[in-house]
Image 1 (cartoon, rainbow, N blue to C red):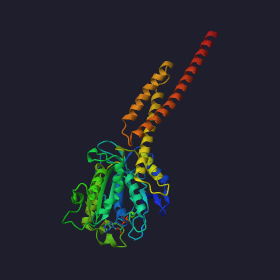
Image 2 (image 1 turned 90 degrees about the vertical axis):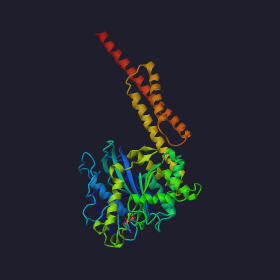
Image 3 (image 1 turned 180 degrees about the vertical axis):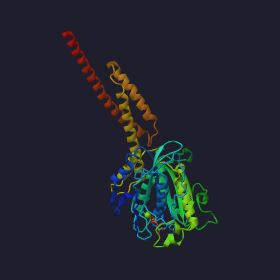
Image 4 (image 1 turned 90 degrees about the horizontal axis):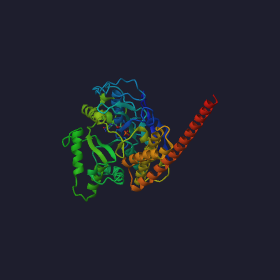
Length: 449
Ligand code: GDP
Ligand code: MG
C-alpha cells in the first residue's frame, strides 16, 4: 500500500462504519469544510465517484485534483493567480513522470478507503458569466460491493453519496449491467417522494449522473469518449419500449431522478496501470488513447461552464445550508436500523422548512427594528404591515412537502413573529417612557432657571 502525501490537502473521512452497525461521523471535519468562512456562503459543486472496489475511482479523482489545482486557487493554496477570465491550461496533466498524489490511492489489493471521504482542500472560482462565487468539493466513496461490505452498507453509502453530491460519477468496469441500474434505486425512490412523476415536471431532485465505463471493449460499436458513451447509453435505455415492463420502469424513473444523464467509455489503460505493482500513477505509462480520453472526460466534468451546482429542492444551496442537510441525513444513521427513503425525504423537508422559518423570522426582526421609534397609535399597524410582507415571502417561496407541512410551519412562523413583536413593542414603550421622563426633567430644570 502506498499513500502519497499532497502539499495542500488530505482525505477526510466524514462518514464511516466500523462494523455492520456502528457508524462513525466526523461532524467537525464536515463543518470545517462546508462552514469554512470562504465556503459557507458560496454555491457549491460536489463531484463524487462511486462504484465497485478497486475500479480506479481514487486514481480518476486524483487526476481531477490535478486539473483543479492547475486552474483554481483553493482554501489551502489561496495565492494561486486567477486571471480575469477562465483559461484552460493545456498542460494541466503535468509532467509525464510525476507520481499521482491525493486520495489514498494504491496498486495493492487490500482496500484502503472506507466510507465517504472528502478532500480537505476546496477550490474557489468566480464564474465568468454570472460573477457567482462558487466552491468545488471532491468526494470519494468506499468501494461498493467488495466482499467485506454488506448489502445494507452498500446502499447506505450509495444513498448518502447521491444526497450529498451534484455530480455523481458511477464508475463501472466493462459495461452497464442491470444491477448497476438497481444501484440507482434509492435516487429513483427518493424522486417519487419528492413528487416527481413525469418528465415534464422537470423537478428532478438530483443533478448530473455520469456513467464512466472503464476498459471498454467495443470501440467498433461505440467509439471511446463521451459521444460513443452517450450512444451506448441510449441503446441501454432504449431496450424494451414496453411501458409496463420492469426494465422500462427502472429506466424511466432514473431519467426522472437526474437533470442530466451521460455516459463516457474509456479504453483500457494498459498493463502498467492495470497490473504493475510498481506503477505510481504517472501518465508516461498509460496507453496514449487512454491518456487522451482521461484528459477529455476530466475537462468535460470540470471546466467551469460544465460544473453543476448542488441544488436542494430546485434551489442552488450554500455551503452552510448543505452542511445542515448532511447533518440531518447523518442523524438518521444514529440508530441501528437502516433508514427508509421516506425518512431521508422527511429530513430534507424538515431542514428546508427550518431554514425558511429562520430566514423569515430574521427578516421580520430586521424590518421592524429598522423603523426606529414609532408613535404609539401606529405600532400595531406597522407590525401588521411587516408581518404581512413576511407571510407573503413565506407563502411565495417554493417548498417541499405537502400542505400540512406548510400549515404547521406557518403557525410556527406566526408564533415566533408575535414573540419578536411583543419584545419590540415593550422596548418601544420603554424608550417612549424614558424619553418622556427625560423631557420632563429638562422642563423642570428649565423652570428652575
Ligand atoms: P478504487 O478502489 O476504485 O479507488 O481503485 P484505485 O483508484 O485505488 O485503483 C485500483 C487499481 O486500478 C490501481 O492499480 C490502478 O492503477 C488501476 N486502474 C486505474 N484506472 C484503471 C482502468 O481504467 N482500468 C484498469 N483495468 N485498471 C485501472
Ligand atoms: Mg479508492
